[in-house]
Amino acid sequence: MRNFVRPLLLIALLSILSFPAFAITWLPEDFNCPLDGQKNTFLVVGSYGSYIYSYPSKYQWLFFPRTDSPTYYTCKKCYLTTYMWDFDKLPKDKFDEIRRALNGVSVSKNFKEYTELPVTERLEIMEKVYSVLGKDDDWWETFYRTKGYHYGKEGKPTAAAEARKRSLQMIEAELERKHSDSPRKLSLYISASMKHFLGRDNDAIADLETALKTPYSEKGATEEDIKNAEAGLNERITDYIERIRSKDQKPRLFDASGTRGDH
Image 1 (cartoon, rainbow, N blue to C red):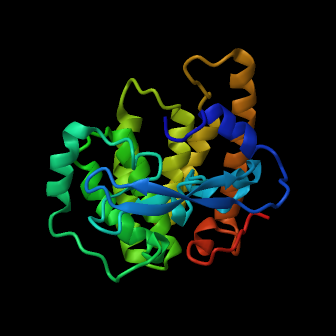
Image 2 (image 1 turned 90 degrees about the vertical axis):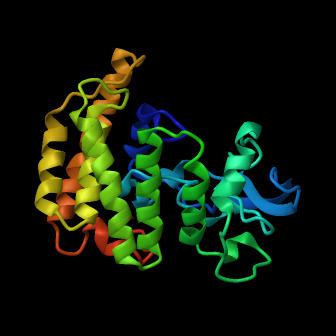
């Protein structure tokens, strides 16, 4: 599964036309590094609401908390870096491999708060850590899409494009499989999003038009759920096509601006 909630729920949330604007809140909490016992203070989620699904990262099929800096924990001693939900849950039998993966890792500056480090710097360390944890292609596709998002947000288009190309290669491989647990309609949306952010608008529109014609399916979903997801995702796809064809509302134009161009 690509996100914390099922695609059906995400699509339902995305189909809501307006959201009240509230802030995401974070609270400090202490964690001991599993590798060296170092005490670190990280931020944990205090509150958020369904408004997070209206943010423009939806045009890359990425959502909070992956889009927020505090999500990426870095130990101030050994520089172990993980998603916040993994930091204290790493398998003990992988500790030695992780330590070896971290050999030679350094950071760009001394820091008091881990959020002082750019997200992309933390993601580069994470790539080394997770390389020994046996993650599947679906996990890595989302990871590279996330890297592309954060490099884009930091105004580093070359690195963003490199990550997005890796994401696209993996989603295209998934689309070629005869059997996949991911809804094909959604995979086409993701493929189109990466092509759009790589400047391939005609190819992106072709994928989105194919997605419009592709029935939505998801294992274990009810007929009513499927019907609602179909309508919701078709609404999103139609909106995406219109924005790509526009002059000033193309989602990639807001890549590094932080502007919420969908409001």
